[in-house]
Image (cartoon, rainbow, N blue to C red; front, side):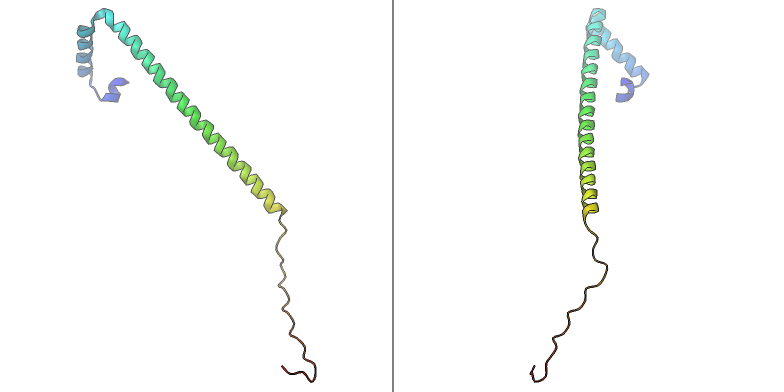
Length: 101
């Protein structure tokens, strides 16, 4: 998996492993492997924590959005419908005889 990550072929990986064996010796390799294991576990735990926080934030936003939708729909249901008939035009003032306009 790591070889695929860095695009290392089998021969290159073998050279790296031989170099590690020569440089650190057979007794140092378990310590290196243990340290790499700890590092990988910490990276995985940190990644999981970030994912949990993202999901927690997304769920909070979803709940808030759903609550706003419920409030909006209840407000729309409570609002009376607008009048469907056209308002009557105001009647012109009736002139009485003898009045000038």
